[in-house]
Amino acid sequence: MTSKRGGRPAGRGGGEAEVALRLVTSALADRKAIDAIVLDLRGLTAAADYFVIVSGTSDAHVRGMAEHLMTALAPRGIVPHHVEGLTQGRWVLLDYVDFVVHVFHPELREFYQLERLWGDAPVLAAGAPESGAKG
Image 1 (tube, one colour):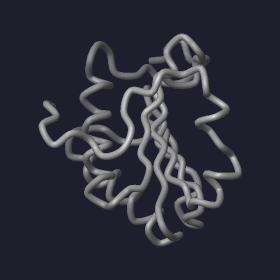
Image 2 (cartoon, rainbow, N blue to C red):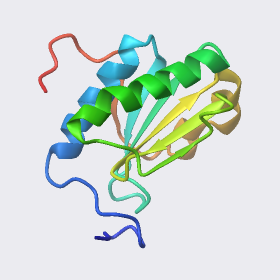
Image 3 (spheres, rainbow, N blue to C red):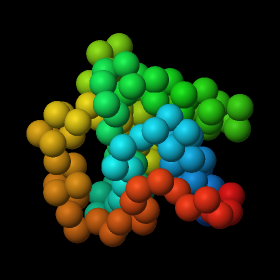
């Protein structure tokens, strides 16, 4: 099944993406993600509804966060449509269709400045998820 995203698989409907995003931010916080931010891209691009952007402290930390995230979401049937950069660990992109997770080495995050590129996007969450978040 395809969606409005030009041949990309259809994503989750309704509030399922938001539930998945809470799981994502929680799993990344478990692995000490730095400067986590969730951007709401709905209405700005057909590429994805949300970007999750975090940094790690090293290549190993970036790889570890990405691998932990995939492992944490898989039992719930949430698997990435596409993964890039996992071997190198400098910038891992996990495309879950409705949302894309960018796990950066700090130098690359500073260089690409996705937050500035998507500066018109509302910020839904920044930092660690609230301890009382419902999911």
